[in-house]
Length: 151
Image 1: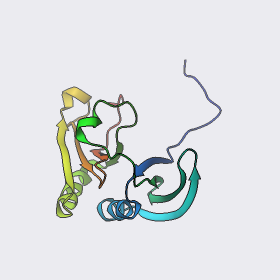
Image 2: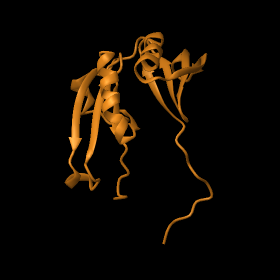
Image 3: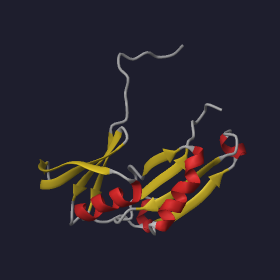
């Protein structure tokens, strides 16, 4: 029996704290084609006035917060800390290799290039996945279209 809810949730945005909002806006625009939609200073609890920017791509947003004194993520701390670990985007299977070529041409910093085999996922042909990092070393995962549990 399927549970029924009186609503349909849809993904809206992910919030990302960055140490230089201008640099991050430029990176997400240049590397991934996001577009700056809104920018304003907000008074955040326990932090105070902080610049925030919304960048849009398709139907979703990335919300950047400028925190110049924040402690940047490092590879050493990435795996051992609880919390949101990365942003994941996907492209159609036939767009995956052109995406990689595009990112290579822009000198993206790749930290993972992997192909999960068909036996692991059940998806015919498996699934390609990459991780690149933004200027604050925040991981951005991009994978081929994959629908877990639907094959």
